[in-house]
Length: 230
Image (cartoon, rainbow, N blue to C red; front, side, top):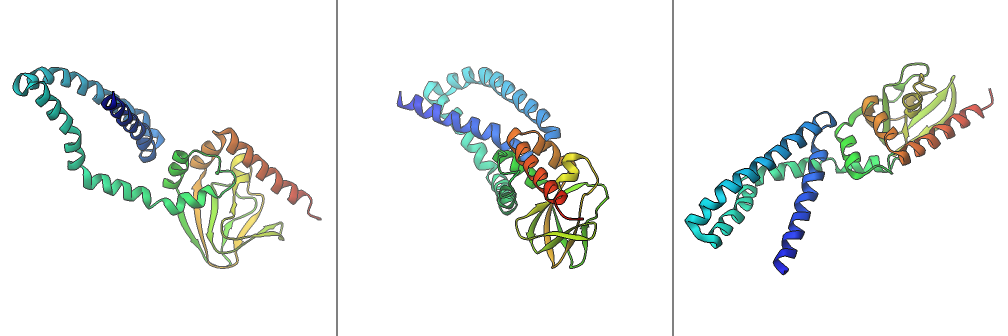
């Protein structure tokens, strides 16, 4: 009974890695094909195992066959260890990006795996003082999170607010599918994380809680703009 409990715990760990690791590593476009290939490999392995097991029992006996089969997985893991370490290091390298994204109000409700997927699609940008990041009236294609630096937000030439580390901007044009409502220009050297429309919009809109948070942000900013004296 104890051994069966250990087998059950081990199976849970395997399933956890199986169903969570691949979505963290693969883009959505190929995920279905990856899982299809994996399920086919599982079925193939079960069939191959049913053919080889009688032969192993005949050669080594039941105990020897169990030992031989049990050693296969550790042997494969040892063989692939260096590559697994590189994969883990690659995920660890995204930790700073993930932490920054999780501080954005509308992204906070997203599952960890979804945040990690967004982090893989982040584009790092640097902006010099006086340089314009977005221009009022232009089409919007990116959402931005400020890593370091300070920017000013203007509407029709009037200063609305300033933005600094951890703040985000650019969501209104993407979520409402309208031209940029303000101009955002750097006051100091600025480092940004940028997310393209095709990654940002489906992710935020696809989760009810994040969509609700985003709507609050959009409505608040539009209301503040409407309340400004002309």
